[in-house]
Picture 1 (cartoon, one colour):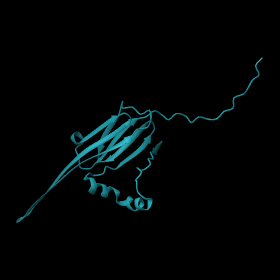
Picture 2: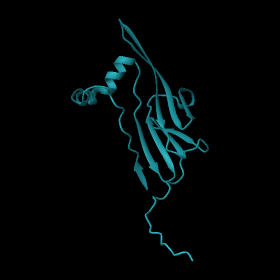
Picture 3: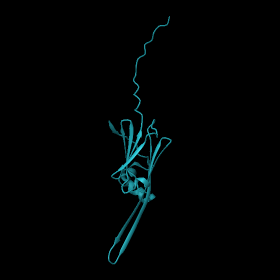
Picture 4: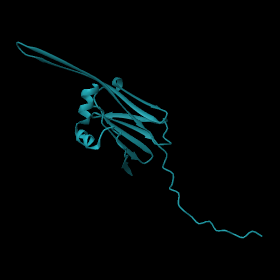
Amino acid sequence: MTRLVRREPAALDMPSWLSSRLDPWWPELMTSLVGAEPMRVEEVRDGEHLVVRAELPGIDPDKDVAITIDDGVLTISAERTARSEEKEKDSYRSEFHYGSFSRTLPLPSGATDADVTATYKDGVLEVRVPVPAEPPTPTARTVPVTRGE
């Protein structure tokens, strides 16, 4: 069974009326403030694996992506380099765009760095981290009392 992993958004130290107005523009605002491109991710629990999918179009996964797991934290880092040229009869225009970005995600308890796999297809990086099945939820039970002799 596949189920989406819910995370609470990072708390912003600002009034809720302002925060709610910034939500739709937050990624673009952060890009303009910090100069980094946001990395969109999706986390899904698929059986005994945590599956993290990250949108990373236009990169070479062999040389532009680094995935690390350290002390229960998964970090995906990437760097994008893009260049466009327009040559016309009387003009020439060239534009470069560089950007590095990363996402850090806490792993569920019990997750290990053994047997982690990563694949890249159609601009999406998928990282699969083994996580043991969740322990059963404790149930209440009645313990009978016996008389000692």
